[in-house]
Length: 104
Image 1 (cartoon, helix red, strand yellow):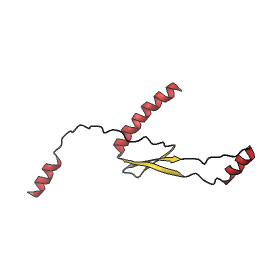
Image 2 (cartoon, rainbow, N blue to C red):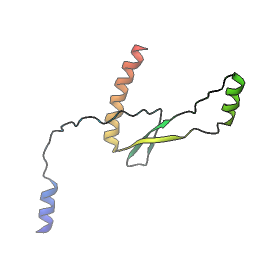
Image 3 (cartoon, helix red, strand yellow):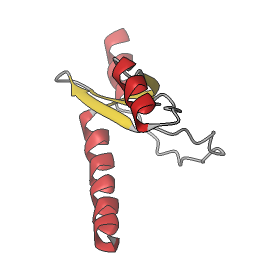
Image 4 (cartoon, one colour):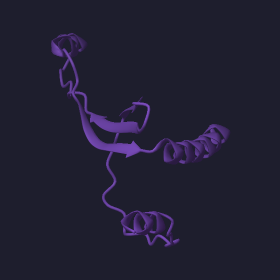
């Protein structure tokens, strides 16, 4: 009897429309990477801010640049998506990319 209830519950469904909340703050991201583990797609957007180079002469600026060993890319958001959702988002990105390329 319990197995029948479980089976019955798993076949019930209802389509519920989404209502959109106000968007949060816009965050600048200039580095991104994606990973796939066979089950989910992980997309990480990061912000990398280069140091200010404030020398008076080109030589001073070069000396400051020589001291820079790396720039930290700080993650601002990490998205985890099922492959079917990632596919839909990628298709949307492709459509918008075509618009960007068309206007260049």
